[in-house]
Image (tube, rainbow, N blue to C red; front, side, top):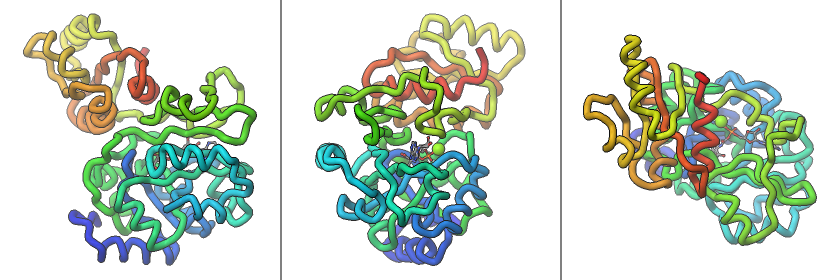
Length: 323
Ligand code: TXA
Ligand code: MG
């Protein structure tokens, strides 16, 4: 069931479910999460089952505050406090050495654990009333992450007892992941907290993709894929690719920022991603989910990879399934 209006009673009910070993989908500022008690191996195993998630893909543990780190992390590096004070609560996941209390199923056997402190008030309240919550995004494995309770329902109805509806997620893509276990802090997954922002606090590297071992195991999987064909074009190519596709009898839609759409013929089917980089980040997943139900081909605008649009392009490229 989806609780349409979340009040204290619903959060208390959700906290009860979590404490007694069940699963709850809940809003965060990035995307919706599918949560279980991070210290309950059986409950966490049920997350993998509900999502159809590969067993080798570790989960992020969601905490209320810095003090809670003691329970889940072995040696908290000094930089963690600096990053916490600057960016948390917020869309930043830090990888640190795993504490003994965290079951192996959470970290897929890794000796490190990803932790984050979500800023969404419902997530914070839920954690405060229950315990550290292990949660991946609340989508069926390999599908686009959910940014509304309805998206979660569309993927997981019948598989979980409760979805807390906290409205549309403000950020719209998953958290930035930074690995603090190596010599140099390394971004494993870009997000709303950009390399430029992190660089103001510490030296930071970006996982180049050339490294043979996938450092964030989840990044090796096809992710964020809509259920129809999807391609990407620079703004000046869109009109021609669209026309060719429609001429081939294919229902086609363009996902682009407003200024790009305004230059296209009025007849072009489109979903606007808005006007600004943060709007595009906010809209992308909802637009992909809307488009996949109505069209056979999605054309996504190729954006210049600066600031948060670097992170948006990281996700958009993973949606593309046509060369
Ligand atoms: O914004 C988010 O991070 C959302 C919300 C719900 O918090 N969660 C999320 O979880 O995106 P998920 O499971 O969809 O993605 C987690 C990513 C995966 O790519 C996983 O491989 C990586 O984090 N990860 C988790 N623990 C890790 C670890 N110890 N070392 C390296 N990567 C890790
Ligand atoms: Mg995910």
